[in-house]
Image (tube, rainbow, N blue to C red; front, side, top):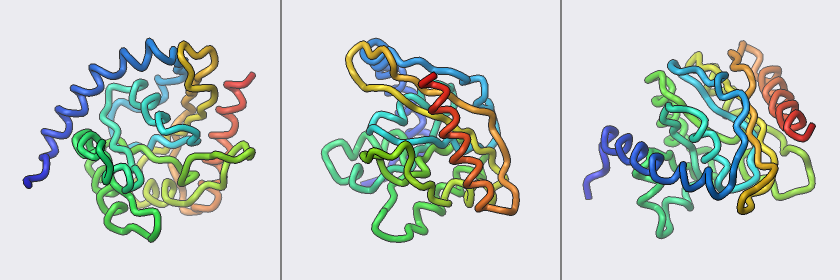
Length: 198
């Protein structure tokens, strides 16, 4: 079977976004703060905390840009696999160091496009405020000279939610010290989350 071309994927992305975003807005009533901090062009990584399978929807709603999201490969094996392929998601095998997925993600950034990922590596189902951040985001930003755009997400995915909020911070570049950059990213995300909570 012939794989969807990039133009086909982008048309699919825009099509599904046009249909699903209004439904999502009506159902969850999310609050989006700081979307002006998302650059309109250039290579960017949109990164933040991860609590729910719908988290990427809030970032997608906040910008006109197409966001290529990295997602666990299991999403590409079920009955909704067609959807994830059509909207340009990148499958990641979390059981190993997936060099192929990283290569595809780096290609996205080298084309000056937008990439979305969650540095925690998985949904936070613990009592901890944040899980430790992995180095993937800062490493890819360093290799491609991309900007990191942090966000903090809090609240509940409930019908007509009263507290579902995503807040974007100022974008920043990664220097040569990746450990320092990763700590900065984690602190920025935590600060944005706490700002949502007042």
